[in-house]
Length: 559
Image (cartoon, rainbow, N blue to C red):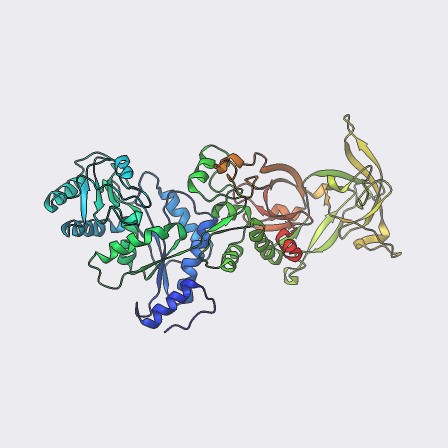
């Protein structure tokens, strides 16, 4: 028997009991079954980490199964993106299959239930069937077609498959108990007619199984032992068990177990709402860096390892809760702090001219070079040379002509340190016709090379900078929350009512020359500004991943 893993939760404890009892011969097999009707999001990451992680803990296996039983909404684009997202998170399925691969077996098992008098063809429309379901404490109404003879049901079901009927004309329903306290056992629909081409099976089928009919049976076909679902599927479990108990399975039936899904503040994970954001142009696509999709987070620069670590730390529980997005960002920041190269960039540029900067014999400004660490957290990342000359870019926020109290950065008559370079003192300013400061003139102290004054005097502020003559242009995307409230839709019932119209700000800035060589997708730290990811497609575009301030860590210390 496999040794028990270090981690413990109610699902792992159940697996240990099953292994001790020999229920599945010590075998553990899970599956991750997304529907390919959209891109995976941060909530799916919780399921991926749980499904694959539990299998790994018990030396088991996990399949990827595309739950493609709804052809109108599904597409090969989504299939390929799902595969890419799982690989990005660092997991490898034992096999990749489709629920549609099992359509023939599911059909044969449906025939078996009809022959056993446990399924029937219903001619009623979907609205009527829904109205007859009843409610809690109120029994349902039996269909007038519920007692059709077996042979008539078999004939109609074969004709449904042959395409003799139009969409919605007939369905196949399980014959269970219309008075059951379990709503899902009130003669659920197993098949509906859809004359729609399928991305995997083409036009071979015109009847498609429902999720409940395909789910547990696909698990059984594959040999899944523990079918892990989020809590909203808990009411479906009696139906899951009923179907499996009434089929001629060769081995023990899989078990469905439910765990809490992941929800974050300022975030929605409804595919319907995410699709609306894409289709209305509120975002630039499924992989927009503001989206909670895994492709959007990847484009924004979130490390896969941080997402996995966050979900592992969140754990497997039975109670839904909403985690602060700042907690996830804290994991991202900690990860990037160890790996991201440091660079200097200015996103709201203001020109700084050193009026006493020397020139060479030809009258050109002398160029100095300073050695700066690529990452102080990792000495193995080495050093780089950064050019410095008499005209620089600084952040506009780092200068105030009339400084407010406790402002220690640059202002007329005040001396500051330029990171790794010299002490400088502002002397005067140049303004445009509107009165806005467009240039700050200053002098530098040549005896302060490296940022240390020869006479030992101290300054209260150190500022980053970029040499204007050596700068590369940058487009910088700064992001705010996509939704303005912690729980989108809490006040109105519709999450999209709380969409933030100012969730992105695009700025034109300047960066040191090394930023021009940043590989697409790499994340660097803009010193004093945050972590920024180089866009994988557009050269010179950087997305702010997270800022430098760890709001979650600070809150934990206060708490």
